[in-house]
Length: 108
Length: 112
Image (cartoon, rainbow over all chains, first blue to last red):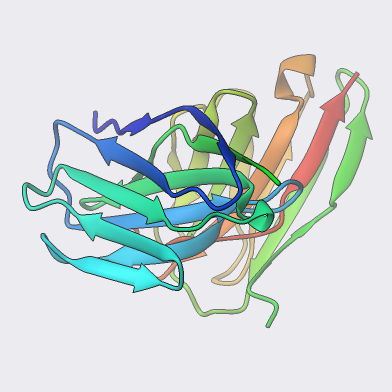
């Protein structure tokens, strides 16, 4: 079946640092999504990507749909303490598949 | 802006008891889902309903049943709860099965 390999599994960074995480697969997809889950809440959509090569920003967040349609990355610039949470990638080609998540900890 | 609403938020069950988690969405979405989330396991799909009147097994369906009551509501039932079903359960919905999924706030279930 379709599997997403999300890395890194966890990150411990200082406030102000930039963050980069990615998802890769051996399968091609036509949609890539990035979600954030804060403690005690459900995942919330951050960015949706619908076209290979697409680069989309949402404030300090930037995500790209890989040109091969098999990968995507999410960057967070100038991290702040409220960026803490679990970030999930998800990709779809008829059915949505989730990555395992990246746990982000930001030290003030 | 209700979106996806699920109840209860917290529940403690004894082994062998049954219960139903309720979910409703007000976005006129066709597809609805139940996921469970365990530490280190990410989100695992239990069951989904691609459209009203249909349900299908996901990755981890054993021990669960679902009912798509109408377009708005999709319930998850544990007939005989087991400690292995201690988890956080998320209901979600989307316009179609390959569209963006929107999640509820989660239900924390503990089976003792």
